[in-house]
Amino acid sequence: MLRATLARLRSRGRLRAHGRVRIGRGVRFHLGAGAVVTLEDGARIGAGTRFHVHGQARIGAGATLGERCVIAAHERVEVGSGARLDDEVVLIDFDHGIAEVERPVRLQSLVTAPIVIGDDAVLAAGATVLRGVVVGRGAHARPRSVVTRDVAPGATVGGVPARPV
Image 1 (cartoon, rainbow, N blue to C red):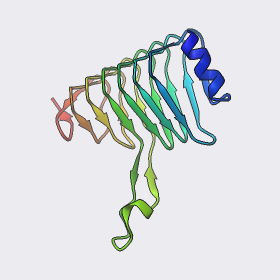
Image 2 (image 1 turned 180 degrees about the vertical axis):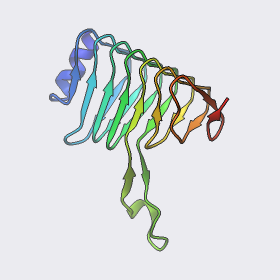
Image 3 (image 1 turned 90 degrees about the vertical axis):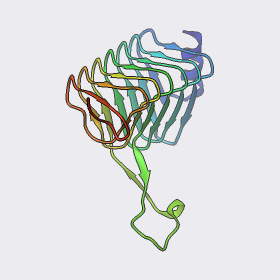
């Protein structure tokens, strides 16, 4: 509870924690101008997790993020109520543009699309979810899978790229 209070104070109102939120040791919030992170009641953030937010990130009520997760949100990342993200899960809602072949990638604009993780979904250890993906309610992603397309509610996916199992 103390770590949540300190994080709120340091963020100058950009971190909004509703109810009892548990934040582990070493959690880092890197918030850009206008960024907002919302942690709902009962959310638990594991030790060493990092938030790199320039848009919006919301962690739903009772959701659990394991240790060393990374949430990178230039537009929007939502984790539903009761969802479970195991250790080292990565959610990235942007890519670098590659349309201009003569221009270096680092100088091209970012391409963004929101990520939505449904209620009660489970992302196993080391899973990565890329921009524009919706993981349905109660869906499962197996360990180390890279989710590049939407996952239907209740479905299980695995592999690189993730496919239905």
